Image 1 (tube, one colour):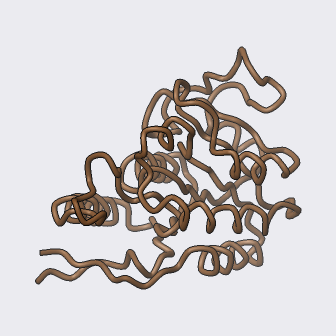
Image 2 (tube, helix red, strand yellow):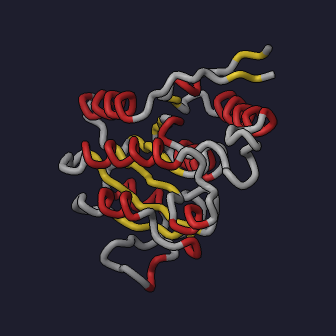
Image 3 (cartoon, one colour):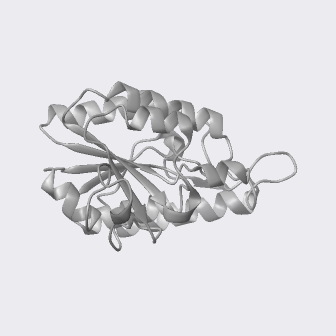
Length: 219
């Protein structure tokens, strides 16, 4: 059986890590992935309040730092990001919107050409980030082992350094992964951790910031 540490990371760990990158002269893109109204409406976002609070603190902290940019990444048909995130994301000058059709935001082009052109960018996420001299990508959002992880893989394959604090993500789908005790099922925990173990083996440059997501132990 796989077990996961209960230690929380979140804002403090992510802030410290990003600040270290900035001290090294790097430029960072925070991608806020699929934290959208449709998921909230379906009750799919497990532990939403705690995760959302950490995300908002992180976005507010770097809002005036020109070496950090934000991209609001959404699934086209799932509505806008959650209201608290909208306020934090778009307080930052230069924030851009991406509507995607794939789990990996680096696959395909931005679909937001016909709407919100002042917020969107044209073409591929990779090209946009490179035009902004971004070196490091920090994806966070929903869900930990699908769209966030797939986007992290896509970023690495596009030549970026990538780090993920998994405590900044919605890890489990409350519709499919949560048991009667309102906790993730053992099967869901194992499936999620195996996805990450596989990714970390294939992509050794993928950095996991979150203490709660260090390699699990088998019992």
